[in-house]
Length: 221
Length: 38
Image (tube, rainbow over all chains, first blue to last red; front, side, top):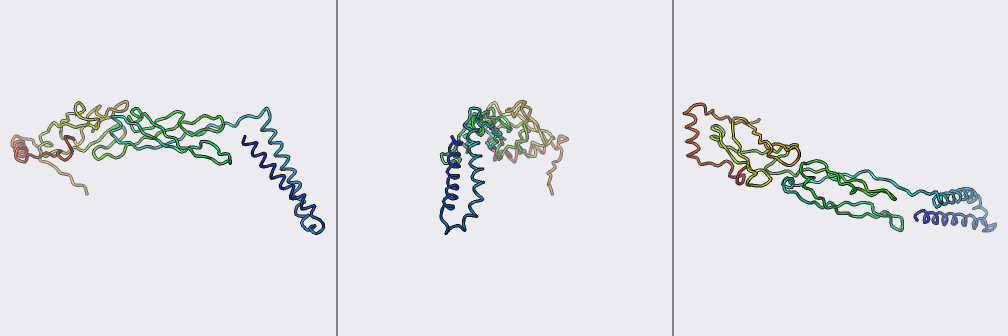
């Protein structure tokens, strides 16, 4: 369809050039000074006309193949709260993609909003692939994939390093000297997620399997 | 410059008694500003 419009436009342009050349040459003896400037374009007009006709015949012929192209996969970075890694969340992702061509030949952008079921995706700050949610292809080309690069927003209490979770625990001098058992509440909530931590002379105490999202789970330190 | 606070070790009964008396008299909760617990 676009080729038909392009062919018509090219034909109009060629006719315009040819008409200009013909009218210039038929303007009479008084305008003979313009003949040398239009005459060299006749060959160009013939070549343009021939190329256009050959191309139109090739495109509209029975052996014409539709144009197909698969786009590259798209990437999108999203920042989520740390609590979403435990509780799960759904994020709306708005993307501007090339959706169609307007009748005038311009590209129209289209906003798509994806809703990502994200407990699995947010299990650990990593990369998640949404198949078929990327940029559209050309012609009959399929959509590419959308890769979500998930990062955790800075948290006032917790610090994430890979799969491990760090927290600075305040202790009193007598707790540090005599040792103490304190409860540490993980970001996953309260109750059974409280971990008894035995303080000792070590500056870092690891609570194995406290940081449960992800496989394998990281440590709470 | 990094300051590091070093505590006397509770290596004998007298030192441990001092720390216990400190905990009893001061009634200080270092994690009170951090919420319920950590």
